[in-house]
Length: 451
Figure 1 (spheres, rainbow, N blue to C red):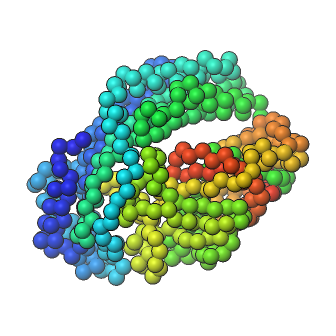
Figure 2 (cartoon, helix red, strand yellow; figure 1 turned 180 degrees about the vertical axis):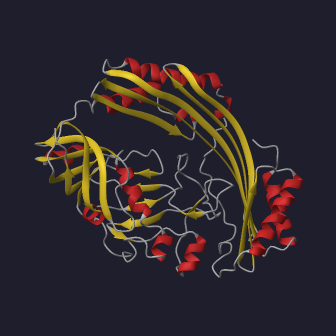
Figure 3 (cartoon, one colour; figure 1 turned 120 degrees about the vertical axis):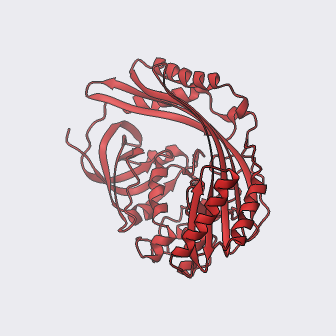
């Protein structure tokens, strides 16, 4: 991808930073090629091809910290960035926890994240994919009345991470995907929805027809929602709605918030916070998966970590500096957005493990309840643990879907919801960085609306 040899440049930057006064140094180099097209009603609304590159540099001097970055990788610009970052570090306050992670170089797994064939796919074919998925979606059902667009995007990323503790790694990865969104109905009875497919390898993308069909299905099935009364009933979270819920839980597990006692989970380590049916892992080591990586944002080799084991909270999310600040010894996990970003505690690929029940069994003994298809947010207040979120889906009567509902709310506390899970389906579909099967909560207060 890049004509610059990242390994040579990265190691040279570290050597210069040390020579010019840094006690410790870390360099992140990045080169990204991206393509993105958006179409609506067959016409191109935006088309973008870009190549970006840059250097992000962290240095530490007597536990003082400096950070700088540049998009210019010419020798003079790189040298200037090193010098200015060192100057900046000398001006900052020394803090005992500041510094590079304690680990050094480790062997990396080959997770097969780079598709060499992606670069050979003509732009015209990507544009045609976006047009075709929209065209098919608009033709599948007479109730589809409009489109809010379709798109195709892909990227190739080469990234290197180097530090003064001997870490020197360069990785290449690709990602591609396409999507479509449609509108059904008219007047006061309109619903919107969409679907997408995203993969590391171009040939593994879902078919255009299947994405169009799914987009249409999730849209038209919500037409004609009816009001429901406010009451406490069983609630089923669909596998594609569930990740929004789990995102709120993960936010409450941030190690910095725990250290500051700013999360309701602060005193919950090794305590039962959820149903024994719930086990949650963070595993970014799955080959070819869109959320996988052999290293995290600090250069640490990734591994599977158990966050919740049969309902018991086993760990919080820490990066190296926050763990050092908090005085805890844990497997750290750090994310990093780009060379312009600092590493910070993060999950990488969260998987709520499959249960033993079929999805149908979640419904069959529900006399009256709610099947949630979409959440408008996560619902969890990370500080207090209060749970409140708007949603749409279907009302359940006598073990079967009865009619669509919209504009309803779920309320209570997050721990009540977690501990109230009484069935977990075996329908996990791995799609993104948070993945979950469908699950049922014994009772949640559903706030309805007047008809």
